[in-house]
Length: 456
Image (cartoon, rainbow, N blue to C red; front, side, top):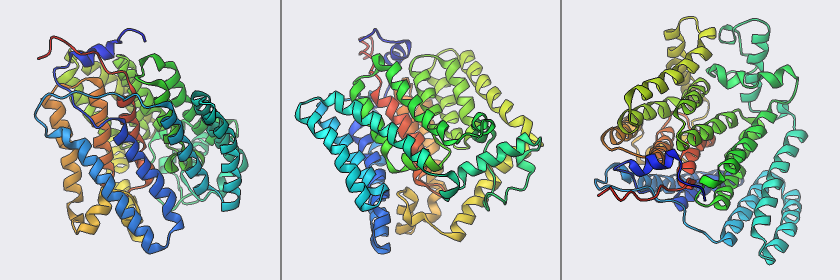
């Protein structure tokens, strides 16, 4: 193992951190989402509501355990990964992959695929070749996702997210502003995608290639971050296992072949790694990219600003980091904004609120999601949704302002806070949880800093 990085030394220098429940709680959060959303479509409507409610209760309980760090007064530290036996890691991934296949394909075809998968895995398990099993599973996952892209047409999938991104690029190539164009030919919903959300697909649009290849490249890029930083990981093989489980989870696979969020998720990982490696300027550029892709990145940017001002040393470096992030963001939106204030108001307030209202009018889906909003709906407390959401965000910011926190503690708290806040949105879709889970993931798998004997 290499010597501690600058980021790790920063963690050890912080006089206050936070103890988190560790990898097992993260796995539990992910598996709740994976199994509930995989099982629910095959159940009767009544049982479907029941499983979403049960999942929401478990989800809330785990978040409560994770958010308990906000009120505990003592100095606490971030815990790292426990050394799980390779056999358990391998078995966890095999079960997750088999379940993903079962829920994604018709029964007979799924049975054939699962038997073929197990015919490779069982001999490896019998011979205790666990690392070979993990590597083979990773290759099978990437190969399977590539086959899905090759064997399906984007126009036949029903989801409008990627077609909207393609449309926006075509409008721009016609020297028109997509934000002033009529988008009703591709979607009846408001067009509130930020510029970098669709511009990143421009190279593939110019090549007349399937834009989903960028999604697959983002998956491979995330795995590459694990490989390149393997010396900084507490347990590289367990980190790989957890990431592969994340990739085969129901929201992740669906978003690869019919959604537009995987480049955003990759940039979340890049931002986390750059912070952990002690490269704030590059992390600021990544943060600016995040702000140019998704409105929800405001949550991450706001907490980053509070954390940097309290815990990261020299204030002028924090201001420089903020200037870099803001610069990337404004460079991305100014060409399309007829008035910065009006653009921000429309894209962050008016259109998202309108989209939420339209979803509730067409299909109020809050009781068919794993979320805190679902729980509040059943408790008759839904009117408190926004107040609770604001409390979660402000409480996290207050803790980061009062206590100094290392990089891992910051990422962990930001990830948990993101999960809680996003699950209280007007509309909640299963893929909304990706960024929060990824922030927590990098906090958990990174090598804990050695104890600082100077601390009391």
